[in-house]
Length: 480
Ligand code: B12
Ligand code: SF4
Image: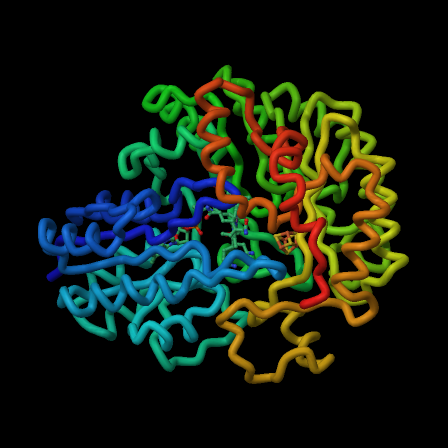
């Protein structure tokens, strides 16, 4: 019978910012509520993570170990980095030093659980959310019992890529971030904490992995439970800014409204950011409500402002909607980070120019653009199917290490030249690769000390001036 479980959050990535491991905290809380003795080891800030793991194994002597893996790699075509070899060093160390039952989980694992289990030489993983599964897995007496845990994947076992029957309600357990994580360390790099309102997305965008992690149906948390969580975090951490990390904040229709109305009712005196929202169907009424509820910044993810590319990426909206959303957000007080993906199927000189025209002419002065070059190919996505069809990769090719798609109608270097020559204000544009700049952490730290208002991406102009000649746009992309 297992009674002591160690949860290890393995993420040590600092770009574009350190992110508090909300998922690991959520499952630790689920185990605690189910009666387990739980310890959460967060490796984010550890200089010698292996030493920390050994210390935890010796001091806590866990009978079960849950390993939370957020990122597989950085998804950066121009400067790819995989986090899997580092992960293997940790899991090998655990295997050598503990007899505990081991379970992998987290968003990174959910994307390709079989391949990662194989690579790490481990037996069990949970694909998707972990609150209920982790409790069932560690409560089980034998392999048969463990198999009942929703989303369980065994090494070597084949499951249907479309299987999503394990997605449950996120309100079963209230996350208690502050109980499990030293949030002060994260708050030093930007005083914002993550909150999740709902899970799932019904979209079918070509490249997207999110429905492997959160499912294809929306599961909304009770707005009052979310407001309560925010209120507790304000009282326990003193933070007043929160970021909604939902896959797409403004969908499905009606939930965002219910959540924001509830937040207004609670009179929380808080400010909110949104990681990702869609231009699709955005209305003036919604934008006004967002402002009233205290939303001050959003990431908006059209990925392109050209109908041809939007269709090939299967975004489900048109460039007219992108333009309309820009007009609505432009006249609001909300700062927007406009996110674009370049190099998707069908991208060519004309489509790049069209998106560039949008960036130049339609993004308001207070806003910024964020450009990712190339698309990471993940299994079970439309992007994978198309890449096989077009001969970019072979059907059974191993894509655990960063593997990318780039349109054959324009080269990365041609794209770079067009962007460099055509973007009116390159200082207002953030390239994903530039977020790897080593001093960014220190700048964030200083920004927090000076109490600069977040989001810190709104200071992109200053950062771009500091790194000027080292910006990725200034160096040829011919090698890709
Ligand atoms: C919001 C978000 C961001 C925001 C974060 C803001 C913030 N303040 O937290 C920003 C924009 C900053 C960001 C940045 C990055 N992100 Co991001 N992000 C997301 C997103 C949309 C939600 C993450 C989240 O917080 N979810 C809510 C929590 C509660 O869920 P969770 O962590 O998944 O945990 C649940 C399960 O995974 C599971 N679980 C977790 N741990 C464990 C452990 C065990 C044992 C078990 C059984 C289960 C389990 O149970 C949990 C509760 O149900 C996801 C996509 C998605 N829909 O998941 C991508 C995602 C996590 N990001 C991803 C990536 C790659 C990145 C970046 C590396 C991109 C980059 N180069 O800049 C950086 C890395 C930042 C960092 N320091 O780690 C990838 C990671 C996988 C991969 N492809 O490698 C994802 C999956 C998107 C994708 N492209 O596929 N991100
Ligand atoms: S890209 Fe966004 S809208 Fe499209 S399927 Fe993924 S989460 Fe849904």
